[in-house]
Amino acid sequence: VNDPAKVSFCAGTVSDFLGSDNWNGKADMYLTSEDFAYFLEEVPGAMLLLGLGDGWPGLHTPSFDFNDRVLKAGITALTGIALSFADA
Image (cartoon, rainbow, N blue to C red; front, side):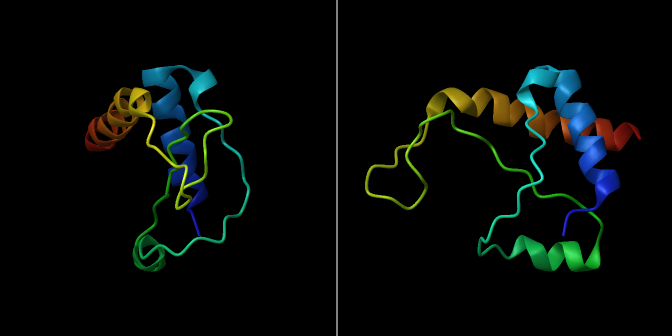
């Protein structure tokens, strides 16, 4: 379960670095298998998803091919979060 304060922090930081139109902020629940959830049981945090674009084939499907054009946004978002967290 994501910590609401950490989600808010990430939303503000991603919006600052990439523009508010690049933060989706959907509160949808996803049934995924991810070990990161165990970290969130011990330390408040947030798991973010990097969108690949509308109409992109789903992960773990035969037609999936990573959209390389989103790498810059993902790197910028995670670097911005790390730098902003260090300054907080």
